Image (cartoon, rainbow, N blue to C red; front, side, top):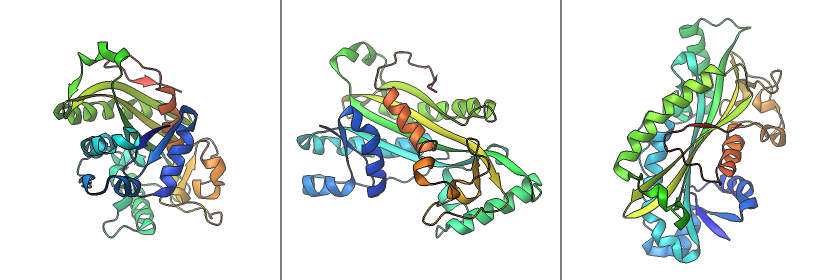
Amino acid sequence: MDKIFVPTSNFGKLREFEHALSAQNKGCFGIEAARSVAGNSFDWKTPDEDRETFLGNNCRKLMEALRVLPTLRSVGVKSALVDDSGLCVPRLNFAPGVHSASFAGLPRDDAKNRQYLIEKLKSALGLSPNEKEPAFFVCSLLMASRSSDDEAGQEKSALESTALLSHLESIEPKIMSMVVQRLSEVCSAAYAHDMHIVAWDVKYRVRLVMGICTGKVALYEQQRLEGEGHGYDAMFFPNAMPDFSFASIPLIEKNKMSHRSEALRGLSAMETPHTAQDEILELF
């Protein structure tokens, strides 16, 4: 079984990724597992997420993951997968966006973040109590794997790793614009981009997928199902089930429409190489 390094200590996230990729006979390897098998040769440094874009922060994480990837080859790890996610309200300039987890400041507090967003919706947009504002959740994924022999033709157009950040940050606004144009038309979607890079003298194929779940945010929180919901879930009403917040939908149903499930589904669809270097694909 091929293994993928996912730089996270969140076991639940690892299981979710592993389940989504199981059809491709791939398993996931987190930070703790990497440390236990590689020992002192595994020198992980958590990168600063200091960019104002999802893909910019993902790029930071991917470069660090590729730096340590050679130390994991002996245990079958051949790829790296990084993710970033958040809630976007287009009329608030896509806030909370990359700051979703700390929108109301530090220390992070979900309840304070929700209340802060409610105040923003009132003060900046003038929403009344019965109104809801269009919004969407996004999950961005970057997965890098060593380029195979049959992809040799692509390698001539490979980006140097130093150019990857600006390349990715030029793509994200285009995807966001595509989402906004269809915000009221679709319940979920995935957008993808295929590229090749050179990092530490190794050539990689990089698959970018952004999964989207559209809906509306309210000025109130709907009652939660026991044990369900986190973050902004209680005030987000997906277009697929507009009478229910994410926190009042059973997890098994939420996972059929969530931004992460769409991103993972898109990643599976991208297993087949796509050759257009600058194309942004709308997968579904």
